[in-house]
Image (tube, rainbow, N blue to C red; front, side, top):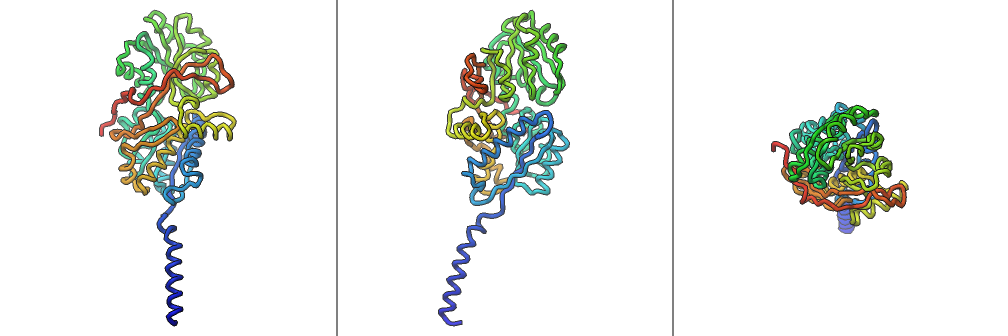
Length: 398
């Protein structure tokens, strides 16, 4: 080979190396598992979560589904809100699918079952949308982060609107319901409210007849100091209308619903003026991200985004922010990046508290509107309750 040929070969080799370099630097695909109860009693919540998660990834990656030049792959699994299946699917995601981190799940019972799997595989699990306090409380481990609000955040928001009187609770008889009632009681004490809890009523998840439950609640409240409030904490088909049919107002009892999904809340039009607190309602946050989500979701689905859609989007933001900041799928680098990490969501900024990895976030005090312009024009904002006003205790044993 003469000198000219050698020079040409060297130039071609260098040029080929330059072409290959970005591919080599980008590294393997990043893989994320999304586990949700897509069939079963909470399927409406799960479908919203998946929609929000995928729209969030689309928005945050500019439609490229890439982070720092690496392709992002999402593997979706349905745990049917069954704890045993949730545990199995997470182990499958970590062990067989080799995901870098996982997000899920819908049911608090299933989420709690998944927590030890994250510790066993030493892989990050972002909990969304399950809310039981135990997830970032006594069942927590260092691989667990949560973008969803917890029961105590719900309770503190509700307690901030009630300064005195008498309270009863109606909740579902499983982890979510019992955790939420405990949180409600603790929140009243934490906020200095003088309201007294006089009764707790628990019903099966799929209950449809509330006659006996309502009568016990009415008997417990009817002679107690005013205001008399029945707090209804329910996932799925909310029993508020059925309770209202039994005319609690004859005992001076007002219903206080927690926020719910839009198809449920649009059945509350007979409760004009009723107040409650909620995690998200599409018309409340004012920021660029929420504007895009509302406009794009309405365009695609002919309806505004719901509370679990926003939650899925928030989880996507945590995933993208963490992987970009760590520039790695390595668990220790992710944990270092995520502790104290601030990230944008449709609700505004959230941040993962270092002590228990709970996302600190605002909540909203609402009133059911009198003049509703369309089927989704349901709530008016009384006020945003900032995270600084929600003294969420650290409940783990770190």
